[in-house]
Image 1: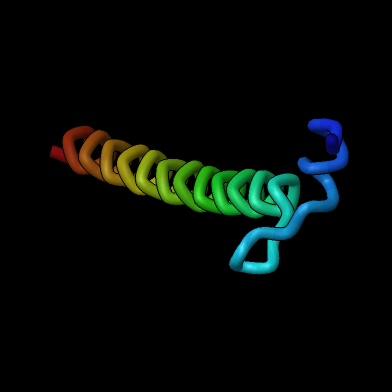
Image 2 (image 1 turned 180 degrees about the horizontal axis):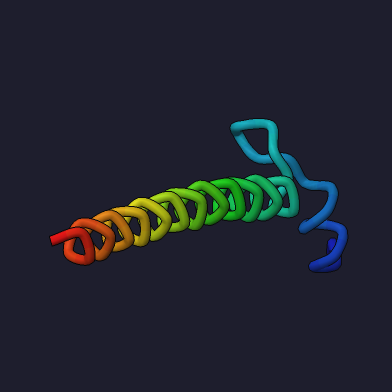
Length: 62
């Protein structure tokens, strides 16, 4: 009988990936998606701040 560790790290499924490989693939995908989501939010926050400064400058001139 195989141990759980032997199965997790060595047994390949139909797609050729071990369960540990699938876990790493999911984790890497999640990290990349999280990185780009944070980057998008930072860009939107910077754009909003710039627009607010522009509105404030315009209000000071009037």
